[in-house]
Image 1 (spheres, helix red, strand yellow):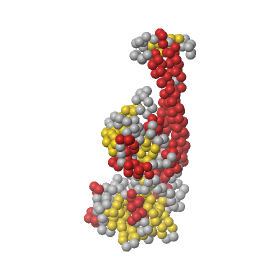
Image 2 (cartoon, rainbow, N blue to C red):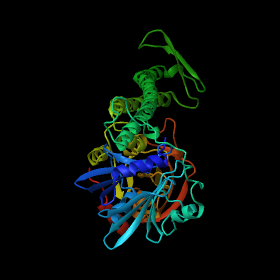
Image 3 (tube, helix red, strand yellow):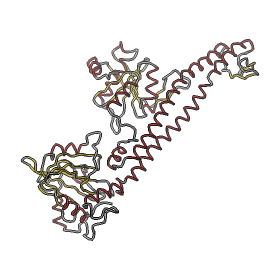
Image 4 (spheres, rainbow, N blue to C red):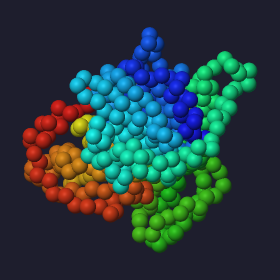
Length: 488
């Protein structure tokens, strides 16, 4: 439920914004902005919400968290309007557009908050109406840098009742909470009401979303754990493979070329046993194949156990995180966590990232904001594949030479820049058996197009949809990468 024009006027009359100084702009998300103001011996926070169904402005006593990453519009405001004073703040007629004239230094800017439910925006212009920036850049409407926005002209031409304007038949609704009649201002009632009932900012809706996010993740982890435990049970029985090899060697004399099965006494467990054989192999080779399968299973058993332990820890962390989310009573904080994909587990702080880096095998390089990982042998290649990359990450490997798997962590919605691809290509050649040639071919594809070889060596994959790249190693580039290498 968004505010109507009469409610907006009442909010502005209570706030008396004229003469207040803007101390800071804080943007929690792409549709929530707060201005911290000071004047007449007091400070206050003015909240703008562009969320569909909850478009409004009012003072808030609740903390407004910053985004984990600086958002463009807040950065713009902090550079252009912070330390400016509000000369005037008023709604344009009944149009639900609030205009604030801000004086800073020798110049003035206008901040327009268009509080329409389906087309809300905050736009800053110079005194002539040229758009300096907008919270939502809409080139089709001219609401982007260099465009023109002067809503006063439309209001003067069309008068009240034009499209986008209120008809004047709205009243001021009751936002009062039981037991608080007469004790709070209209702004305070709105702040409290939206915290409890406010559509996109409703605590109950946000908590339900948190529950859905966490339980979805928990369900996927639980299903994965079931599969891992079933595989662990298979590996636990791997000792039987070694017994098969021993029985085959003990019965070499009765095995004939072309036999598909060996029927023999089971001197380990009693009775008789049928062991499948592969055509064309000698008894010794048949036994060796079972011994190799036994060794792979034993190696895999410890890795599966580690994965199970990690999954169980993650499941417990998600359960604790969900409990923390459900206890959070500030809708802005909760909404920010959910908007960033949070599940209540501790945020990815620098310390947490550092810990993850220490656990990551191989070498890691951070070039600008891109992470490149290098596995130098089969064990590191396999560990990176299993635990540290996702389907859209990029995989590179030297063609015709054994060597490193190189991965580039993908950024959502971005293509890998050419210079980052060349960095990774140089590393793929340098950490391969072909490094002495100074150049070589490599292929690259996304991780989701890699297929593991059944019963193959650790880390062995077959790529599909791969592309080719010829790299001449660049000593200068490699030296720069060495400076970007992350310490363990």
